[in-house]
Image 1 (tube, rainbow, N blue to C red):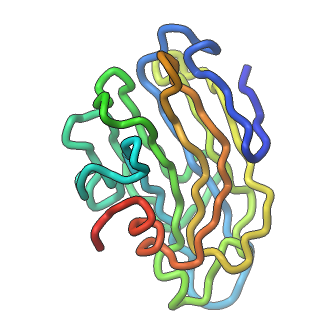
Image 2 (cartoon, rainbow, N blue to C red):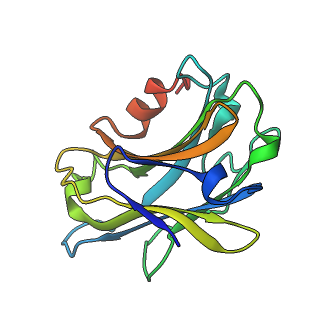
Length: 191
């Protein structure tokens, strides 16, 4: 049974499901009814070291760089509409392939051209991230974002991280106003 987390909460994936080796991280959202441009939200993952930054730009996984160089993380594709129920975008993580240098995988969602289009996460509802054991299809953890991010154009939904010999998931819910560029710069990606 999945653990529903509040902002800042965490759960040990290793204890919840011993032997887990492949995660499916599903991210979802719905745009509130608005006039104007359609919303296009994009999920991305930053593979960061203990410094809090990526080793290089190849550790920034998104629709234009969908697979990590070591094959540990794979973005399954861009959903440009967010229509329908369930996951809008998904990321597969092969835990045993994640380099020992990587201590945390940061899962973020950004509104494409949000600043230009005057769109923000205050106009998004039903946003969530869920972590699933890919082999058993068992949902282990879920975080439903409820905060109103009325000026933010990108949000860190959650993190999968190492703690000792365990893999854990943390519900984050931290917004950024500068869109993808600000989010990437914050994690050491050169834009």
